[in-house]
Length: 195
Image (tube, rainbow, N blue to C red; front, side, top):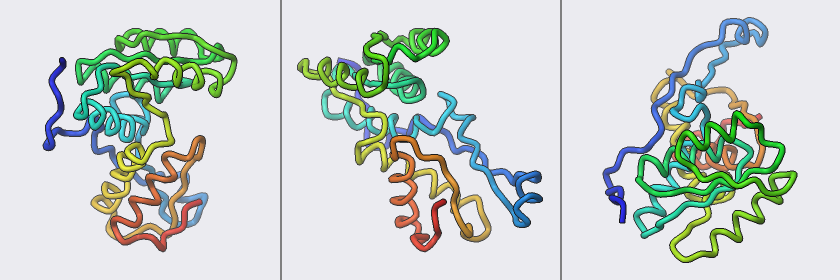
């Protein structure tokens, strides 16, 4: 069995920079800051939540991760699996490009193409995860994913002089949104609107 992360194990994500965007600040007429999650080891915020979920699953004896993804979630799961010394199967829909599949394989993932859309790939991933010792690493719908994403807000609080007037974020599956809401509550910023 691979080494298990300890309670003091560092997360797989980095503290990403917060920089003022001069063009956006000029356009908005107020200071606009950007949290540069593109500098994360896997190129997106997904490593925050998925990395946390993978670390916790490994602590509980998971021997193989299974993740459905169009790209970024799979990259995060593959990166976390590599760091933990565990195998991972990433199920992608046929719409995922060859560059995505290549990146996943370079990180050591076994890649299976199933279905035309993410929902179909996810159905296959859930089937594969039924094997003993395997754990499904959902790309967005898990409390541990949200908990990992919440770390972003603490970093904002540590970086900014005052709380923001609003937070703007993109929403796909909703995992980042759920994490930011949780993070805002944790730092006492629950009155900050999310746009």
